Image 1 (tube, one colour):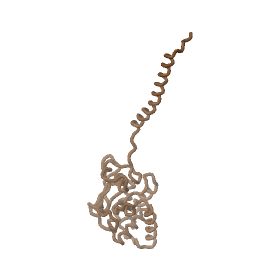
Image 2: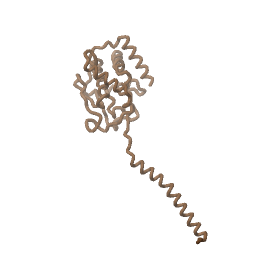
Image 3: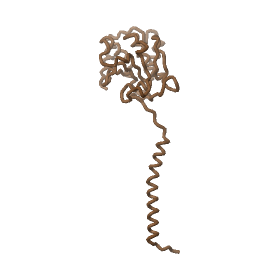
Image 4: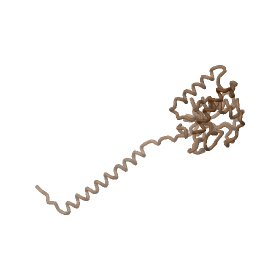
Length: 227
């Protein structure tokens, strides 16, 4: 049996084909939007690549930790970051200037910092501020800065000082490497080892003017200033 082809049947066929094409063009866009809604949001990260923490001392990687021998405490990312930043704080306290409780801060909520600046590292608990009111350039006497450079050299480039940033913040000390960089764990292990070894670690008299120490500090300073 054959069916006659009429203008009406051709018109119906064209309409149906058009509807099918329209539906097929819309479906991928709808599916893509649905997939976007289903996909979990990637957590934000600070300038150094560590994940922002929503709070401290509660369901977080950031906990308030004591700075041994100083009577101070500060909220930082626990573990390797903690070992490194507390070493910095202790040497600063013993060798540069005694830190007052109000002059040591760590983790801050994301809303309190500029996410486009190195201070964003505070919101991941991977930075501390020492003397937050002294951010401008020139806050250290020459001998104090020599000690500070020696402390940074101890950290082998894993810690960056805000005094070397384009937008200077001399109070800021941050982990300079990302969470997967093996140098972070290696340095933390070194500092943890020093804590159990007589004559090593923070609180030990250091000849920061020794030629070998000055050379390594100067080399690191040049490298970090270029970044």
